[in-house]
Length: 152
Image (tube, rainbow, N blue to C red; front, top):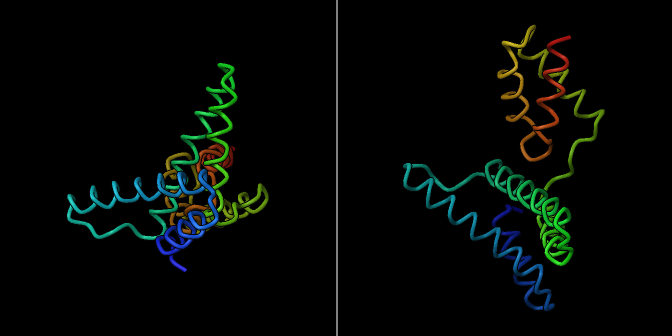
């Protein structure tokens, strides 16, 4: 099922069951998606594809995790808990993330496929990983692993 349809179906189900937190989180996702669609339309592009939607969800997760850290740091547990609830909803739409070993194997495969030999080739490797594993890999961690592997 396409992600857009899944957002709509999950929203309807959450509304029927009275899950206010889930309804609010899905509406935030849909609003962000609509903003990006409008932005893409202005640039003469079509609606966002599945990979781009997963990228948007990943960005939303990162924003919320940063907010949680700030709220925890400033002793605002009620705000941190609200962000954690949104994170749980957003993660429900994400595909299973690659584990550490799977990520290393994917990096090795990308390095082999691109023929990367030095740090100059890091961009090629990360681009290959993004094309193959969009939404399934934390690219912050992956970039650090690629950098370590290529500089060795």
